[in-house]
Image (cartoon, rainbow, N blue to C red; front, top):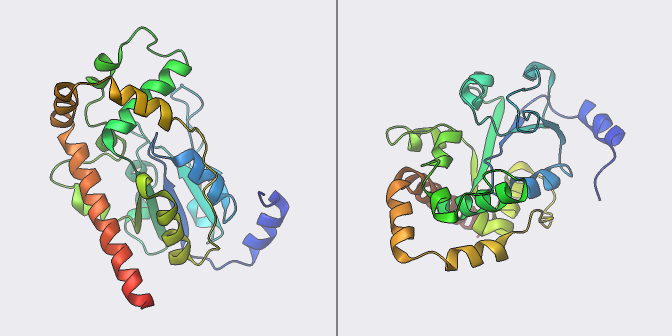
Amino acid sequence: MEIPFFIKRLRASFSPKYPVYIFHHIPKCGGTSILHLLSNWFYVIRDYREGWSMKYPTAVDLSILNSKFCICGHWEFKGYHLYQRYPEVFDSEKFKIFTFLREPLEVSLSLFRYEKENNINVDMGIEEHLSIRKNYIASIFPLTEKNYNEILDKYFFVGILEEGQCCVDLLAEMIGKNKCIIPWQNKTNTNILADKRTLSKDVIGKFKKENSLDYLIYDCAYSKFNKLKESLQTDVN
């Protein structure tokens, strides 16, 4: 059950000033479910554009927030990327940034399903869809082959959707929150698996080649997650 708004505000007034938490919501990486979970831990501020428009709300004054707040957004377009909208969050211990990633082909297939359901590119076939938005994950941050490792290191936690509950449990432990079961939203895994079965090995191979940067990012994040998990387990033992 979500905590009532007035209780969150009351708790916020007694919370430490820092850190303020930043959830970088990469689309189609389980973020909607994570947002529901975060609402049990924080007063969540949603910093998203309006619908399909390019209209964003006024940037949040981060100086008035404290550790009970978590600001969330995609920050997916040039001029509105996280490093442009809130540059201070990357170079100060006052802020902790976290995100979740997902296997790149599944991200693209989830986007395909989402757009079909929302009457976007309805005439586009799945193979054509896979050929557009190359390195989509990289474009959201944005990241390059030269800086992806360095930039990911600025995130205090990078979860992996495929490790869902384990990731959330580790995150809760790291920030001192009660562990919660992920309230899964937008369940499209069955459809995605069905779509994936229609793809030939050649199509999948082509996708992986054309999205090699996304796979570098995903593999790097997965490696960092495994190292973090091992280090925390070692500390417990």
